[in-house]
Image (tube, rainbow, N blue to C red; front, side, top):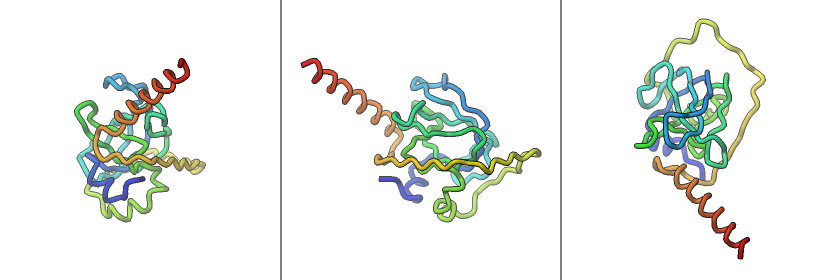
Length: 162
């Protein structure tokens, strides 16, 4: 079940909108995956700088969020011991154009950054409507999901051998 906007806000360390400026392999944490750099536009929770890096798993099978460079998102990031800013597929993170319910709930942002001097225009955005049946109530949701996948794979492998 997907979180409500209120649940997403309360369970997140930071909530902000931002444009993806870079996507690279994450070498900063033990979980690897992707490191996504965003140019922050508006902040509702937390205190991100004008540029922030978030981490996500490298695939949707591991609850990684499918960020696309040049697109603008409403981001719900969690913070835990293993990762200072992490985003999962099960959060309310979404393309900004698809986040109307959230923007209405969140109201006026606590901070807005000035637009860059050379604005980018990309009207040919494809909508990506991923749905997740899990609810990430804590910072351990992605780790639990990955562990569960590994255990299920081991059980299937043992059954095939028998």
